[in-house]
Length: 220
Image (tube, rainbow, N blue to C red):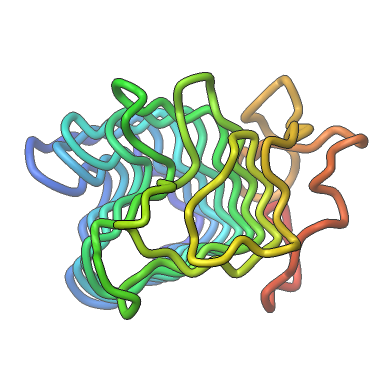
């Protein structure tokens, strides 16, 4: 278990710039900042990983995911991904992946051909679950793929500034092509243990999401 830590300025030509997990790990109230790797600039997960209230910012994936590369089992809740740069922000290759109540803000995907969350699997068993997430995209970046070749489970309550994913079924609770109402100041201290991206009072995301069992947001 790792609490209240900062992983900054680490690098590897392989996978897992900030942290590599091959067993069981819980990471809470941590910051992964300015780490670099071939893939998984922040974390490479091959085991069982729980991420809670953790911020990934300015991490780089030189040829693959900038924040998290997952081939194990990962649960990501109440986390912020901001200004990471590389391929996809999160890549799912096998295992399981659940992402709930997370903010993706101005991540940079090379060549506009990558996504904040991408699934490299072609079966439902390993398809990521995504719910109650906010995706605020730059001009040529995207939330998740819309091609039929990729599988996702849409748990609903997502807000996306782009036109959204191909996710088996678009949920009636999703909002597509909708301004996020994110604070123009971007990532900064808004309370809690980590920097986050706040919402302005007119944001369509306020009182819109689903807690999915969480009792607080990332700010505590």
